[in-house]
Image (cartoon, rainbow, N blue to C red):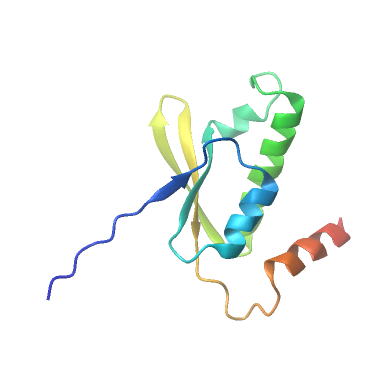
Length: 117
């Protein structure tokens, strides 16, 4: 019996993702799905002095990065980086199996976080 390997396919957005679009992906992703949510140098891309982005784009990217980190803390995704060039990285979220103990949906977790803020 031949046991081949399944190639990993990473979906890359054709435009910058919003925090809401990232959340929608997390909610519907199956374990192993991969999403490139940013390409660049995230910490510099959200810093006004180094970034060529507008204030609104930097703010959205900052929210996206924070939400990706939050999703990792909730055990919903693994976060990985792939170097694609000098000072250039692909930021990738890999969907994890949904926690079995979690009786609440992603929407309820997001609402609870907003109420706490």
